[in-house]
Length: 224
Image (cartoon, rainbow, N blue to C red; front, top):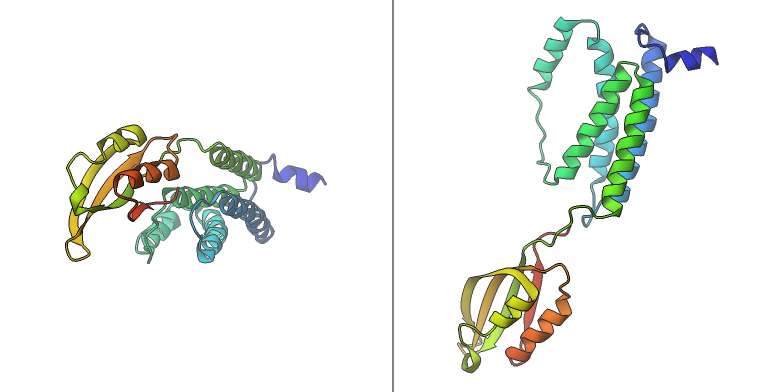
């Protein structure tokens, strides 16, 4: 028990095989917590299983790297030179994914330096922060949407939907006009940003009252 307690208070532990195994075990457990929070707070359509596995493996590998370079500046520069040649084959499109990668790397670095207490504290605090930001939807906003409205040629005029846009949107801009149905219909494409209290059905119903109940579609550019 005294040995276990000393792992969490002694900052000058010598690198050994047993200590390295302990560091890898601790960072593995903590990375499972990190990836569990990632899956819990994911807001897209589907996350990648490979990405989840990557966070775990990178955390473990970085912990070993930090153990190797902790007492040797020359080795550290050499390893970082090698790592600079490695690049990801697929781009990370979600900024939050980058935050989770950095989260896992920091936990791995901390465990590699045998700062287990700090690593556990970082995991708990950052995981709780990620969850609270997700739970309370901090900073949420509606992205730009694509609105397509079909209008009969006899009802067509420039200001047909101005009052609808004023009531339901923050901004709107006309992106494309084209004829359909052998020229008897006109299809308008708008980029709109809806107000926070806007209900899509109410806005679409108002538009249908003005376009003779023809087709109207609203496409979300990105799901947040």
